[in-house]
Image (cartoon, rainbow, N blue to C red; front, top):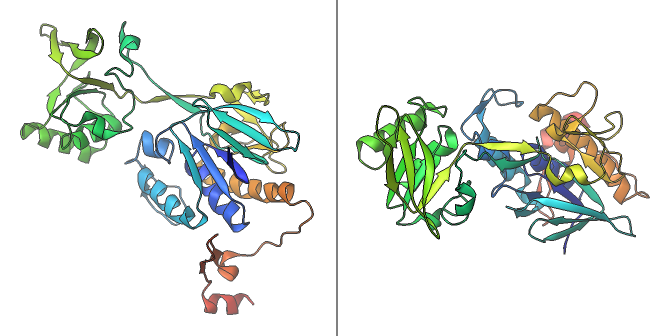
Length: 351
């Protein structure tokens, strides 16, 4: 049983920033995310996409924003359960909640903060009739452990950042890498497209466009894929792994069965107070929630996380009075006792 003060469902930007705001209040956090790494969509779908509405950053790549947030919360030593989906929640007699993942990992906390963005992400699967027969037997929809492909023949399908980035990365790992896309044009970052073309010219990537994988060949595991290319005869391409990277479809998932008030696939909250749901002790912040005037912006998620943590502190410590201090005055102190002091000149000016 993993115990913490605030259990955060979702490790995207809003969930990560919640760790910082909770840390200022000396509250510990643990995060659950179905994806294999923190960052949510910023890491999984568009790590190289520029974001323009983060304060103090005229432009920052989504992946770099995740890195900065991870650096900011490091001093508060958050725990992570990654690659697992929060499945069930049970309220205990003492008022705490036990959340169990699809892999049976149990977590207990007095506060649950749902920061699941648009929901849990399920891979978009290509319409190949027998693909389900080969899942985890050569067909993977996410790359969690690159070493699995060491010295193997790999076929990747897709035209976005994930397909491009992993094709580039695996050239140094796999025996061979083939990238198949149904168009000649790619949706990913231009530098990634240029890098793939460069690797193709060097003979390190086999690029097949416009084409689609229409079938999988094999008995107990993947042995090849059926490729259909425009104005050419279909052919079988031998491979050990087929990795269709067509993005992730957001779904509210099992959380929809937790007894929360749902409206249009989002969780209703009381934004007049603290973004609490209809179940006391369970909050929803970021894109996963809805209320009058809701804006689905990372900036708004940060604001909601800040107010939620203040409310969570009062629920956990009902007999304590917290006096808010500006970090420019009090600095930031981690759980290990280290402290980043506020500059003396700033303290003097404020005092």
